[in-house]
Every structure is written in C-alpha cells, then in structure tokens.
Image (tube, rainbow, N blue to C red):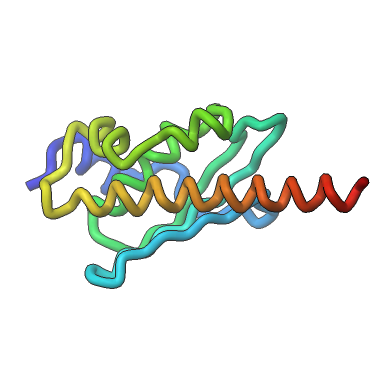
Length: 129
C-alpha cells in the first residue's frame, strides 16, 4: 500500500518532538479519521531555523509530517507557505488516494504556524511603536 519512501519516513521519522520555546505552534486535524498534527517553529530573520512535529495518526500522517519538516527547514516563511499538500505527497513519491488528506493536514499545520508567527510579530511591532 505504501511505497519505500513513505515507509522510511514512517519508521524513521525526522524532527519528531516539540520545541519548548517555539516562536509559533500550528495545528491541524481531521475529525473523520482522528489524525492530529502539531508543528513547532523557530524563526530567525524570516527563515525557519528549526521545526519539529508531534502527530497522532496513521503511517501516512507521520510520514507526511516528517517529510514536511525536511522540506520547510531552512526556507523563508514565504517559501514555506508555498508548500502545498501536493508538494508533500510528491516528495514522498505519492500516497494512496485514500491517504491524500494526510498531506493536507501537514501543510495546513505548517501554514497555521506561519500565520500565527506573523500575527504575533505584527502585534509585537505595533506594541513597540
């Protein structure tokens, strides 16, 4: 059902865990299947310097979270915001159609974290004026 790359990221996920002093935390979930994802970001000079995830879900959900962190680390926030669910699935060499929602969840969690970071940064800039 899953290809080798998906299985590799599922059995040996990268960047698992949380960042205690994260600059932003994004979340996503699917009520139908019960998968939930949390993405933690550290950002410096508009670049993602560290990223970690915690996922409760199936093998595809964990693989998508893992590969997403590899794709986003070192990118600017705009570059990371451009990562789509299709990009995640392609990076894994494809997912079964019934598991494509897992790639949606990982991209959504990343986008949520970036949006929260930007909102927080904007609020801090306004306070310092």
